[in-house]
Image (tube, rainbow, N blue to C red; front, side, top):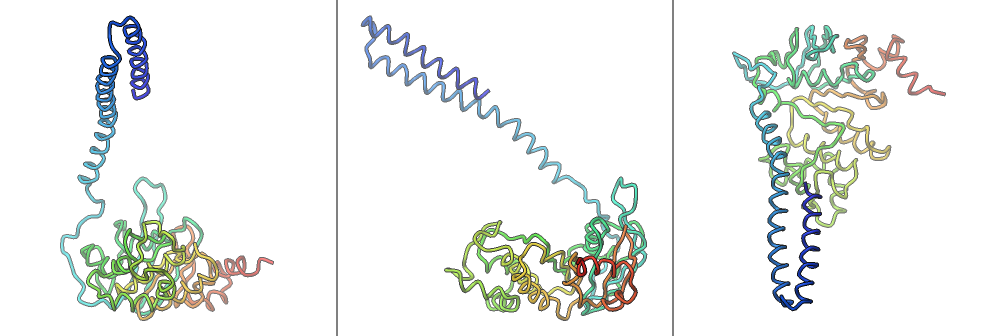
Amino acid sequence: MFPIITVILNVATGAVLWFGGQRVDAELVDVGGLTAFLQYLLQILAAVMMGTFMAMMLPRSLVCARRITGVLSHEPSITPPKDTVTPTTNSGTVEFRNVSFSYAGADAPVLEDISFTATPGTTTAIIGSTGSGKTTMVNLLMRFYDIDSGRILIDGHDTAHMPRTALRSQVGMVLQDAVLFEGTIMDNIRYGRLDATDDEVIAAAKATYVDRFVHSLPEGYDTVIDQDGGAISAGERQLITIARAFLAQPALLILDEATSSVDTRTEVLVQEAMNALRAERTSFVIAHRLSTIRDADLILVMENGGIVEQGSHEELLRAQGAYWCLHQSQFNKA
């Protein structure tokens, strides 16, 4: 429609100039009358073009409105608990008991008969090939999905009977892709706990090495960044998300490939910041590089939706099983 209207406008303007030019040459119309008529024509055609533009946008707007209405009216797939239980303690004990899960319409289960216990203050590393169920496991812990069978317990409370707000308020997540919001660095860190004071935000930044690069910025903590991080690097963005989780002080911590997108030098800083973040809280680390999880208290080796091995780094190496094969492939390639 828009190209057609543009062609009509140009043809109409040319026709008026040609026909009016003949009348001016014959002294039937003066130049002022031709100019006024041309201006009237342009005003009419501009209104026609605006109406055409609105007619083009109307179907798009209707589609967007239907999609928004669909999202607002969508029923959550998670079944709300009938008898809610709010934990009175948050020591951080996590237990999976014979947990099985499959996505809707899937032919095979993603997780099958998963059982392990993570005690307070320890780090549990989850490793395995792509599609083995590592991320799905922590998604079930966050109750993004309902499990098919089994139980997931936090401090002895079944997560199926916990309000999602109460459950997720105990968990801090640092993902592979650093999610920042448009605003100052101070605001991005404070998002972890909105009632935190400036001193608490700065203390979290110092504990996670954000303070080291903030002082090199012209406006310091008041530096405004966009959603993509602006002028700060990928490692610095990751440090900001770690500081945000540190400020929240969660009982449980989930680190999903938090160092995979940074260079080796920045990885050292990010790793030290994560060590400070993991102190005295139950942590789950999803990793492909075994060098990042050597010090984990418990390592779970996943294959085809099941745990094939679990134990410490030394124990798994002595067993010479699946973990030993992964270790050999990463460190003894020569």
